Length: 329
Picture 1: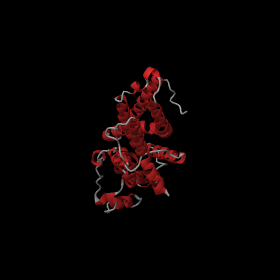
Picture 2: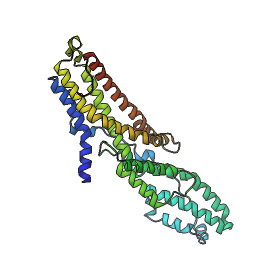
Picture 3: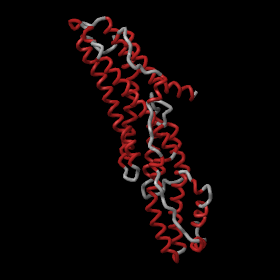
């Protein structure tokens, strides 16, 4: 059932736009230039920055064998040993972040248990505190789950259940809060759960792709309509039958199908906008990532809204000239 619903959502936006364009062209006995088809929909693609641009290279702490064995009175040497296994050297960003938090906690404990090594432990603790924000940035920018949430090209957007939107808000809030000094939120189960919620819903990516296709196709449609000399179809300010048919097409497709999707887009955007702003302005995150979030989360929304506005204004002007109401009969 989930696959059926997802498939319907994937095609509904593009199919509606395509039929809207084709119906108007049929009424006017002409063709819609470069009409969109379902096969052209994947051209609306989100291009996420390359991982190599986003990954912070963090120098590993060097510790000689003698110092390593001197720490056997606390659990720090166990963590060090784990990190030096083949699996430990290829940790996922989320696993690495939790590991670094555990090291910091262990260093604090070791200082209490082994005051004779306080100089070594203090230097190590200072370095780990300095590099933790970089590990956090890698978590946000290079995790497979966040990449999917911000750049999945598999679906468009029709609506978001309140639970899904709330989960996305909570997950983004959780990731941002992890960068605070308080480590009470940092546990593996909570982190993986929030990443999973972000990935499965991928609300940012779905809304950004839908914004883009609406902007592209409505701008194209508005420009095409302006070339049709429709005002000539209202001699003496009276609507011809073709104009009445066009009004029906406008009502059936734009008012009843496209605008409700736009309303849902607006609702989700304004709910997630504070997180987009926080991510796009965060100094610890890489410039390409911040620019990407800003381009789609802020500029993309403005472009989509302008496309809606210009399209509606065209019809309002035409209907006023023709002396008819844009409302359904």
